[in-house]
Image (cartoon, rainbow, N blue to C red; front, top):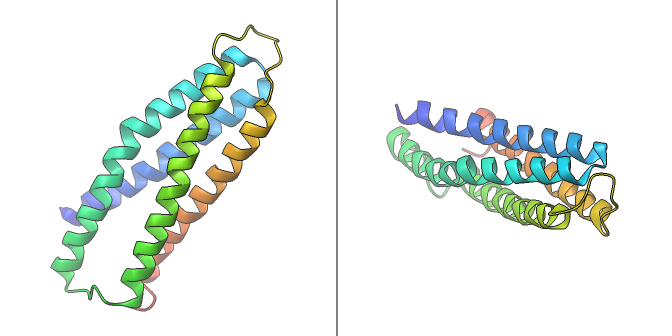
Length: 149
């Protein structure tokens, strides 16, 4: 049961992240501040509603699995996972902060109006989203292949 919860929560983490990124990028392509505001609002809500619980469940179930399977907490693999989790988590935190800024930049703007700084903020959010996704893919690879275990 612990393994299933660990796998499902990681799938939820990936799905919410990719979904939020997709809709924010699609909204940015419209150049409509109202659409962008709604997309970033929904992305932030989803990331907080699902991301925070997953960020708690993942290390807890991981720890329990380590104990259950008898894996060493001093292995290269374990410390690689810890490092990747921390870096990926920091990218995610900064991504959510960028999404909050995007939402604030588009708040109250009329359709068709220009929003100063929006392109730079979307570019920053895009870079953070790609870094976060790369970190999640790295974590999946570490879980599947378990190098250094």
